[in-house]
Image 1 (cartoon, protein in one colour):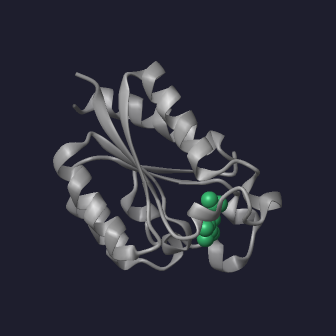
Image 2 (cartoon, protein in one colour):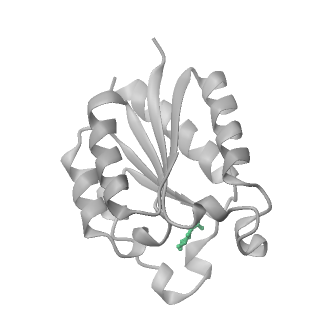
Length: 148
Ligand code: DHK
């Protein structure tokens, strides 16, 4: 049975493609979902791909993934920098969380240099555009081979 990985996306990522393409790239979130599903097929991972602009949805999906999945790849958008609730949710579940970003947040505004989620994550990938998602899935493949 393939392991299930939740790929979760936070606020404003529904606008990818038209949102600051010089920073976030030309691909839409649907394009990125298709790339993730294709990579999942290669890796033997079933991908559950979701986006919400609401913090509580993301918290609920962390808990759902904790019951149903082997790991989470999450681009929490701006909630990365503000959300104690997502930090606590990542700590409340027993599966690895990989934080990811399209842009290199460390080369941008200072307020993006802090992640409240990162201390609760297994690791962080940023700066590789849509490839950040692919790298996160590969990291989770390795991590979940080590766990379930
Ligand atoms: C996406 C966002 O929406 C920002 O709030 C983060 C991240 C960076 C990204 O690069 O994917 O600061």
